[in-house]
Length: 219
Image (cartoon, rainbow, N blue to C red; front, side, top):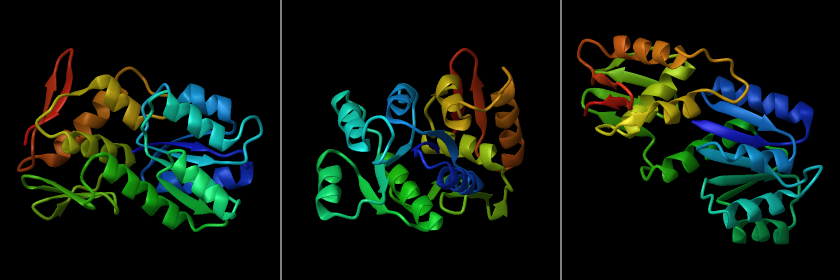
């Protein structure tokens, strides 16, 4: 899952980003509202938004992105504990709300839940034939065999499995796997797809490369 994290507190931001990346999220971190709105031209699974930003308020960001038709699941993260702030955020289009201070494990769990609901499948597991993916634990198994996937390999497999039988374009897969600060060569995606393909062998679903189109996990 690719996540946009909007938070101006440097110390908090570094800690949260490090934890989320350890939980297999691809995280883009920005520290102000205008940059967040510019960044939302790219696809994200979930947005985590602080309200107290240095330029425009998080609520303004929320209003502008919803008016623009952006329906990405959004979790408000803030120190404001007044009831009216929580009600305003939810009424303006937020999907969830967390108060600071918070436990990063809970934040990760809430983000995963939002991403699952966006995909139309709230289950913590996803199965395609002999393949079973544990979305919460970021693990995958073929007939009970742990594939021992690394973070980006898991993201590749999860996106393909969630769209089993459908073509996933290279552009979409690159957007899910790599953050805007990641240095990825022109063949980086092919490397990760190749690793996943080998780990699925011999009795897992097959990944087919469709030249000029993308990839397909055969159901």
